[in-house]
Length: 111
Length: 111
Image (cartoon, rainbow over all chains, first blue to last red; front, side, top):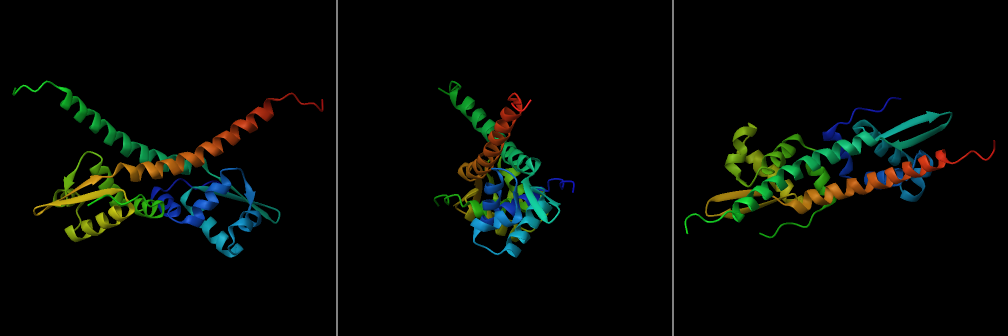
């Protein structure tokens, strides 16, 4: 299946859940089958499948079924889109701080 | 009021809403009063106040009331915490790709 286009609303919503973030942490170390993903998480396979659906719909994760095994992997474009949104806000905010710093460094002409 | 400690669950949940992201975009250009924030967003003041509460509870925004005016500003630690979480996942994932690249570059000893 082709990966979903990153959906920034769904990406941030998906990352707002600690179990889904734990899945992303696990997947950052490499692709893994759904059943092996469920083992250390101490939740049912059905719950993992549901979380994976949310992650896949957002564009953060890609899954592929070969035979009877479904393998999950990180879809890097999803994390990149979320990181870019955050970086853009921070850079606007930091440029503003730099400008304020420049103004404060100017000699005070009222003296 | 002291800013809230960043809460990563609440931060990502808060950023999953397009109106709240629009508020963050506006605030990245500098502090602004609640009423001026509401003007271009084409939603009621009550709705803006609700969104601001979600952003403030997560640690993304700080608000302060002086006299009758409540001013909102970005709390940079919130965006930094979210950015750090994303960067950490991406760097683990990229280091793994680098290692795979190194393995592929090794001479094939079975030849």
